[in-house]
Image (cartoon, rainbow over all chains, first blue to last red; front, side):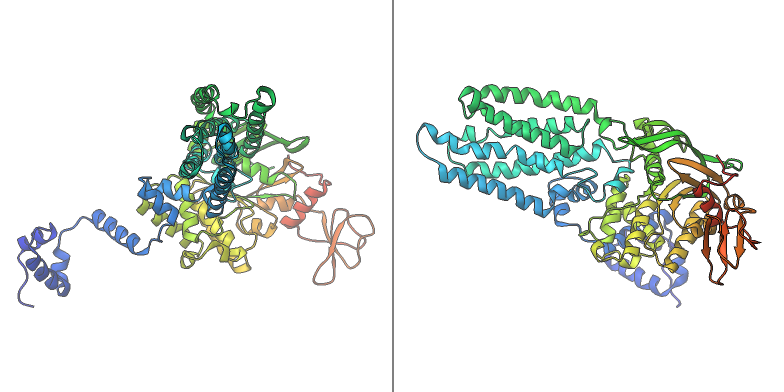
Length: 276
Length: 291
């Protein structure tokens, strides 16, 4: 080989400042000439990092559907991978949630009637809707519901960060599903959305109680309390919708920030290594 | 009991834990240094509870733990400790629908490896350490018991932890895999503190520099494997007939009877091993029982 590219040409090539024709020409020479190839200046760290990126691009597994969806909504990739493993967001749970909602909507539509009793048809839906995120939270994180819990419990993310992240994901999912079902309901639209504040309040209460008891125990107690509260309306005040009245809604609205503040203050107690 | 380890990485003082009325840990006091320490004890001795307290997945009812200079009773120091420890639980659960790579990557995220390229490189590294690199895309539910155990070990190795807590790591491994595990554990023990619980005294003899024996929620022995064997010095016998007195004995492969304790009629003294010392400690009849 008698011709070798001049040094300045190689340097410009290394900096990526050559036009495509000259780049191809220099590259074809470098491919055949070890001496010139060895003379190409490069940063070792940059080269190693580049190779790693290329290797990862070729070799990395395809993310799960849930991970891809969450990333599309702007969730950081590592958080999306974490949330996609939430047991309460598994396909079975989502189908069950959709089934409960579908049943409640169908029941409301079948029993819908004109006149003053029209709102009563919404009661099964209004009672069930706030319980959905509660059930999801019970199955989101904990020793008895998460098969990989013990391994996770010894990691820095264990405890309140893991529980709150997953609870938020479950809540968002339940609210989205229930919100999508709400326009299908008969009756006044304002009343059909009366499940939202109780759902938020019950979720916040479940998290607050979980600082003292295991999440499934907290959720079971709250579900019983919620059912009792709804039943108390017609029993003691003769009002089927007392638990969804404006006064009750104001109470839920006040309870949500208060309970969340309590969760924040007691967040260390959500850690498996903390004495409750 | 021999001298404490030269470099103390973990100190436990009067650790106590009870479940309801059942006392599981009854004032455990011990020290761990660099290297591999074996934790021996029968079922129900409190080994797993002790390991869970050290791995910060369970809060003790009393006593003190100090690991790598950190106090796990303090929430901030507990998180700092978790960044530096690896834990293989006795019953490591899995998401069966995940692939091997996905499961280890998931734990890597919990260990705060947020950068994807770095995380993937680390996942590949630990899978290579346990010979699972070629199964990275296999579903967890399709793995054998031994492969699952290696998978669990891989997640414990993420982040190159300074303190490794392994609860029965050789369960489910075939003899060749156990040899490989021993090689890996002894290599890790060169620069780290490794605590592993096991029922296999041969694992302890093969790779542990120190051994702790637990019985009824307390550490009844701490020392080297040689010290544990020495507990049985002068109390191991070989005879052609079974002993007449009530004592622990078994028939060996050559047809003779190996007896621990009082000398049987016409008994010849035999060299004590780790298992002999361990069995005598559990029998509660050892006059040289270490505290």
